[in-house]
Length: 287
Length: 287
DNA sequence: GGTTCCTGCAAATTATTTTCTTGATACGTT
DNA sequence: AACGTATCAAGAAAATAATTTGCAGGAACC
Image (tube, rainbow over all chains, first blue to last red; front, side):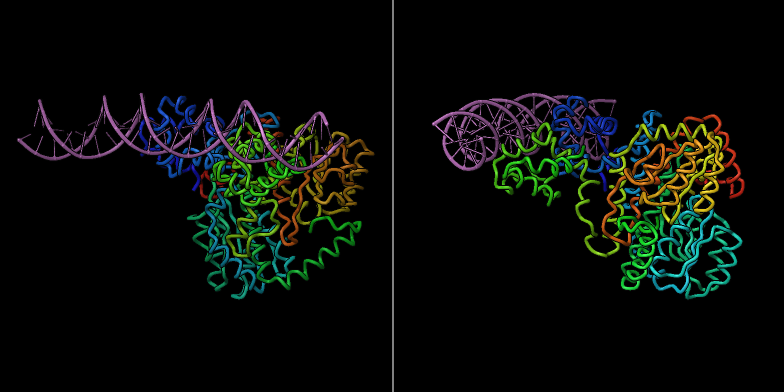
């Protein structure tokens, strides 16, 4: 658990002086990581021993341990308190977006249900046919991405963002197939219907969505992604990066599971791309 | 500049004892951030003053400053030395992927040409029509994403992953339009041709690609993304996350530039999504 | 042979922690 | 309600530990 979260959770149980210390650390991280115990104590109007006690209470060995903990999580963790970039100057906007993206990955990692992902990977690796569903800009991208990643491993997969097609495919699917669907909001009613249809026919279902949402409840295995999206309506992308990372993990696990087969297919695709281009091997698979 | 890079770059200029210290830090980061100067000195068989001098040489104020610097960049920076996950256990694979993704964002940020992005944003914000090109799984996703993000801001844009269409569109474009293309490898010959065609017709061109590549040279403005892809052929995704982040930055800057108009369009789209779903406002734009 | 630079020792300085004490608050008892 | 006791917070001072500086010996390189 990171020190910022701890500090916020423990806040209620801290004494007056300790709250002052916590606030200074929270508000001026740069100062806090660089300050000595005396400087920090001075700024919080407390004595150095109080700072030591504060660190201990938060589960740290010592003041320097506290600073290290702080510095470690801070790079990704600290700024989730600030919903907006410092200014709309390009450099600040860039930094804001990148920090938030890193943060989303950090939070994703913390909340990851590894066991569920493993189960999902096993299911997908053994499927005769995979149907990947998602609608709207974000989730359809995830469905496409799944297709993109898994067909290269030699799996049979089709992606669809069309609700009518989704329903028909779900109805046509067999118990040896797998249906995987994504919904950022968790309230894509059509996807829920497709899941219901599939489950009636005993088709395994996997959802990539918010936990405790209708979509999550409709699927057999849920890969939960729960992130605060932030307030800026212009910019809902960091969640997408987290979803992509989940797809990536899934695809990697599947690849490791079916390795011999996957290597051959990948090599063939790569070979084709390389000969099609200018013979330089450095390029990536798929563009 | 982060301390890990500095350490590797300065390695040649260090003395014997200092190299020993550097190696210990590089190899056992966990130990290094938690150790006192005496412990570190002991492990490297040098005296504490030598450690202090080592820190100074690396540009740090003091040993504790060094530790803080270390802890700060380490979260993202330390593991780019290890190309493979520790094991293929799901938890390790997940951690590996997430670390690499964070790392890609970190490196992207470091190499970002903010001025170029700003110029690109200005061009796009003022375009009468935008053509977004990209082929292959990765770049076509970027093109789609551009469309996805920019149409919401009220801009006119179409994405294409079809080479023939791209050429026709490039030929049909006017100097008041903008052509933006993505290529991870930088060697998409058809895209180069489309850029050439567009430039003949004085259509502004923007490339999202590796710097110094054919595609980069073909475009008027290049937004360079230069990342090592790592050796694992199964997993080329962290680069994609970096590209997505660039799109995100671009879209945000454009949004801030054309704010009044953008807010209205966004609100209208959101309104429609909300009424279409179950009236809960929490969902994201676009899924 | 001289210069430069590395290095460790010891001393000095600084930072941190421990111990001890005071003051405040809460709670129970008369 | 008043008093006493327990508990806890918090600072002062002392003790300890860590870090840095100054200096000098020694190695390597002109």
